[in-house]
Length: 268
Image (cartoon, rainbow, N blue to C red):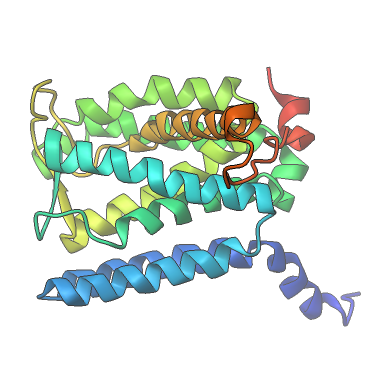
């Protein structure tokens, strides 16, 4: 016999994922809008809107995670300037770094941080990471075999990111963060390159490594961004502890969460 409460139970089960769904929904709408604009001031408005969206979404996270998110915005902006404007491995369609890109990185990072407390991660543990890693491996292999027939590109660059991503997913206590980031960046890159917001060069400058558009496991780059975020926060903690600046207003940095459940308990 079916309980009359069953229809009401479904929204309750989905409630822990509403913010993730919101962020995944906002991304393609933002990118579609950017693909249709014709002037910088319109893109700036999209950037200000995205900063507002990130601010409101981050309010749902604990204070220490909000600090990590905004640190990620700063750190990722530096990587964007290097990757797009200096190295030139990918180019935005207006030949700039759009204002919505820094908060976009913050949204991806927030998506990953909040994933550690979702019911699916708490229930299934590292099996979630294994499923995500299997998907990433399939995409990387396809980029070397099947996709070149369709796209005319051999995605060596994406495949080279796979070992880095696999290491952090399998060995890091923050594996849920990286697993979720693969989902968020996968959506971001597929829509962004499909709408023409940016494009990856067929051959990367300097390294001359062939690349897909987008590279398959570019989420591996977030392993570097995450490490940079943690280093920046530890530097702030050290700075705050120095007696010669004790009278200077430096943001208080709380200790990074251990994220013990489920990650610590299941990390290898």
